[in-house]
Image (cartoon, rainbow, N blue to C red; front, side, top):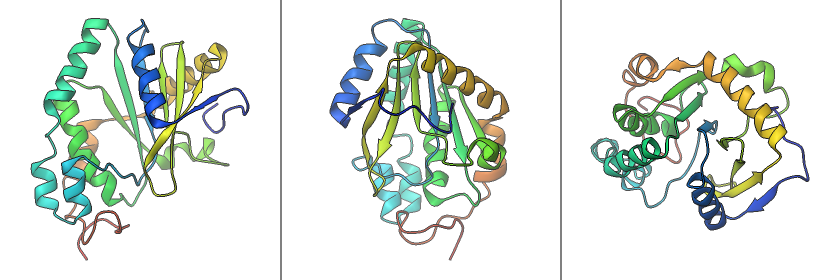
Amino acid sequence: MFDSFPTGISERMDRPAYHADFSRVYNSGIGFLNKLERGQHFKERGFASWEAFAAGDWERALSLADERRDDYAQELRNAARLGIPHRRLRVVEFPITPYVQWEFFVLRVRVDLGDDIKVLDARKISDIEKDRPVPEVVILGDVAMYEVVYDDDGNAAGANRFTERSLIRETSVGFDTLYERGEGFYDFFDREIAPLAPPCGSGTQTDSPGSC
């Protein structure tokens, strides 16, 4: 299930092709969108808040965290218009990485707008991560599923597209199970994120949270 996907049945797409296909399928009529996010280090070039974070300017990164608020609000309005509920499960390792610490301030904007996001401690899924971490996956109803892939430097590099409905259904059931284990976003944020000191140095180079 989540610990591995069958090889040879997916179509590899570069990033532009993935985005185009996602948009086409999303707007064609699907029942739901589920997203599982697992990685602890990513790069989001072009996002001013992330650029400030990466440059080590924590205060500016936070001040810019809601720069995409209008885009997120429009995304959620569009989802409501199409009748597509969104759920996201964010897996978090401890100690919390600077990237995840920053990302949670951005995710809080989405949750404030009504996005449905839960948090799952990675230690709670060690039983299904014996061989590899659970994949970054986006499920669009029972129509398509994307295993999002990144290069070695943490840049988004496209996705592996799956259309085998039995596999999509099986993965959806797995997502539901993990989602039930998840914790409410605000509870996690207030307990684990809010008390952290700002990351020290460059956000892309620092692997430990807190002050130096």
